[in-house]
Image (cartoon, rainbow, N blue to C red; front, side):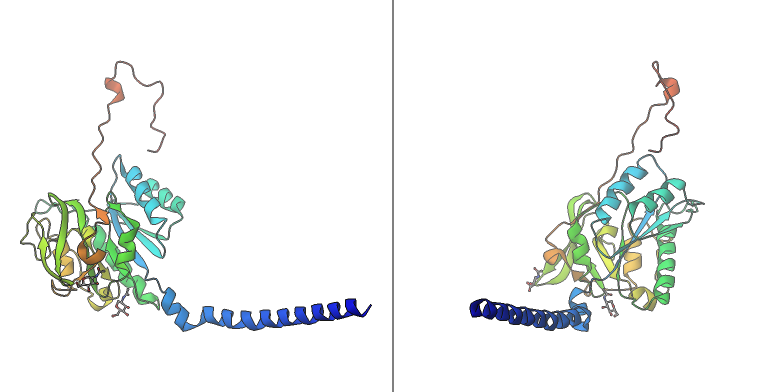
Length: 289
Ligand SMILES: *[C@@H]1O[C@H](CO)[C@@H](O)[C@H](O)[C@H]1NC(C)=O
Ligand SMILES: *[C@@H]1O[C@H](CO)[C@@H](O)[C@H](O)[C@H]1NC(C)=O
């Protein structure tokens, strides 16, 4: 049966060639994955999102909505700072359950009659933590973004901020009495700002409308928010350390797209059960809302 023998030989040679090809092919492919070229292509700057938060009825609802956006963002580190003397169980348990990479901090605002600025102490504490953290790790690259816990963030805003060199900016929807507050861009450069609320601010930009290269916070150790500035000037206060109006990098297609909205959660009104003619059957005090 010479015919069958030839077939077997071909089969054996064929398999040998297949095995040889497999090994030769897989080796370069493996090397490619660990080569530096490939790392440059797939490098995704880490985003440090800084969110001050305080106890209120809609807090968990707001944090839930935000966290479920963040679950879809790659390479994200959430720094949540409670305005509280001690960390609350609600936020502690909530963060644990999100599965997100996070740092939980707290500092109580010292109320002052001179200033109603909110989030100053909390954001500054987060920046202290960030500098400490960056000093300890080898890769100091990243992006810092200040995020309110009740704003609305499209995933695209995170893609945009990873493009920044120093400081990038983009439009913010429904803020400052406008449909959209935004930088005016001519030939790829920012030439002005479309803002009606305190347009004389050095940077008439909402907190949600910019992100800063994290490495710069090591180069400017004094950069922080201040209680001494009037309301609406916190953004300008921090930005002045890092950039000028000319240097700001316009993102979101030359500032023509809205990827973040300054939404506000309405304060809920709850009825005191004691004042009801038909009170609820049981108390709900043991349920976390
Ligand atoms: C930030 O600046 C540093 C130092 O200038 C640079 O190496 C890095 O690529 C920049 N971008 C990011 C996202 O870190
Ligand atoms: C922004 O505008 C500049 C100048 O007109 C143009 O070259 C560039 O491609 C634009 N960028 C984007 C992302 O649309």
